[in-house]
Structures are given as C-alpha cells and as structure tokens.
Image (cartoon, rainbow, N blue to C red; front, side, top):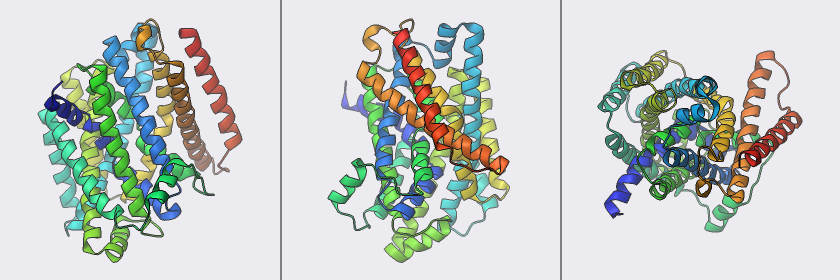
Length: 420
C-alpha cells in the first residue's frame, strides 16, 4: 500500500470527524470548559475511543459481509421484519440529520457574523447554496478533500485558543485519564458523549467503507476520529478562558479580552468551519442512509439530501437563536443511538453473517457492551429530561435509568452468547 493510497484513505474518512465536530460540539465542549475547567476532559477521551470502536464495527460489518446495514437486517430477520427494522432505525436518523442541519447552518452563519457585519438573511442563503453545490457534485473524494481542509482549519483555529491557556502537561494528562464528575456536571458529561458518538455517523461509516479492506479502513478511521477528538479537546480548553457561556458573540468578546484580536478571529473561523463542514456531512449522511439502509437509488438519495438541506435553510432564515436550537438537537441523539448500537453489536456477532475469525473477541465484546451501557444511559437520560419537561415533573430518575441499563446490557450480552 503506497503512502499516497493511505493519504487518500485518510482524506475519505475525514467526513467522520467533520460530521461530529459541529456547532453542537463547540457549544457543549465550551460550556464544559467554562463551568468545570478540565474536569470533563476525560469524557472526550472516552468518547473518542468509543466512536472509533463503533465506527470500526459498522464498517467491518459492511466490508466482511459485503452487505449494507439494511441488507444485513433483511438477511438476518427476513424481508418483512428486516425492512421494518431498517425503517425504524434509519428513519429517525434521517430526521435527526434534518434537525442537526438547522444547527449546522446557524453555527456556520454565527461564525461568519463574528468576522463580518453581514446580516443573517444575507449569509444563510450563501451558506446553503455553497453546501448544495458541493453535494450536487456527488464526488466522494472531492467532499473528502474539502472536509480535510475544514478540519485542518478548525484544528489550527481552536489550537490557537487552547495553547493560550496556562495548563501544564501533568495536569492535562491527569484530567484526560482520571474520571471526575463534579456536582451538576452530569448533563454536560452525557452531552460530550452524545456530541461525539452521533447516530448518523454509524451509517456514514458503513457507506464510506464500501470497497475497502479492514486494515485500510482501520487506519483511515482511527486517524480521522483521533484528530476530531483532539479538536474537541482544544475547544474545551478554549472554554476554560471564560466563566460562563450563553452566546457566541459574548464568548468572542471574552476571548478578545483574554487573547487579543487573534482569539476572536480564531473563534469565528473555527465556528464557521465546524458549522459548514457539518452542514455538508449531515445531508450527505442522510443520502447514504437512504441508499445503504432503504436501498433507494440515486434520484431518491439526491432528493433526501435536498430535503435535509432545505430544512436547515428554512430554520436558518426563521431568525431562531442558534444556541437553543443546537442544544435541542443534542437531545435527539438519545432516541435512536442505544437501539442502533445494540443491533450493530448483535449483527457483528451473528455467525450467519460474519465468519468466526472476523467476529469480535470476548474482550472486544466487553468493550462494546460497556459502550452500549454508556449510550443507553445517555439515551434514557435524554428521554427522562424530555418527558419530565413536557409533564412539568421532576427530572433525574437515576435509579430507574441505571436499573434499565443493567437489565438491557445483560440481555444484549445473553443474545451475543446465543448467536455465537
């Protein structure tokens, strides 16, 4: 394998890091840094590892079985049940892509507004048309190179902000690998996991992996996600320079005071790159789900990304404030991610689909079950928060959440044992 081939593969996988580093990541990681300094840095490290593991399993399923996730569902559960399961898993994720798109476009526009005096009504159509032109080209390698450039811009911009903070190496290493959960940090800790392990990325990884080998996939995937984790860490470090975070413009002024004009410009550039890259990958992922899960052909796939982009554009033009929209979208992760993770674990362990040498080891399955338990806690917490808010009831039913998590994880473990 030539160095050029490896580089091309890393570029192709850059859509993964570009997808999960969006305005939601900027919002959540900045809030974590502002409120709890380095205490939640370990959440990013855990999320990065978990993201690599889940993406690897999703991509390996496609490479080894030669089937998309939708085809694997039908092969394992039959045409009727498999089609319903595919619709149940893929449908909400496409809707989630549309919800994310609103925050993505708003985030990109917010970044531009920090650098220009242009109005939202002017910037939003420009961003939407640029995204549409990129997606219309339908060239995976072109999209990959663009995402690589935007991820690089994000990396430099947020590194400028992070390296201005007075933290020592020992302090950073300790915060990265020793878990700490200060009182009141639970929601942000879950948010950091949710903003990294994004449901549509699982399908995106499956679509990107077509035509690759397992070793080549692992190289490109690991490099891409690790870079994404580093950038998220930079954002958290940048957030420690302020004591509160409620608005991007307020954060920009705080960074200008702390780091000079370069700090404000770095935030604007980084926020635009985060929003624009995710504004491309979110509809792109929706079109891949339409093809790999539902089996739709090119015209229907193109219509899918158009509808996702149109949703983001209309919300962007509506004048909604970006922060509430972005935070609302974060909660949607919890509705589908645990179920998707559970089915993914069962499919990769199914002897009817995967040969013995390609199925996960006992140790790897243990890691997968741990990740399943974590995303299930995240999902149940999101549901608890939404339902409690709707009913104006008390939130935080942690004993119930932990009990359901233990029972569900045990059930998935039992089903793995039976299928092997």
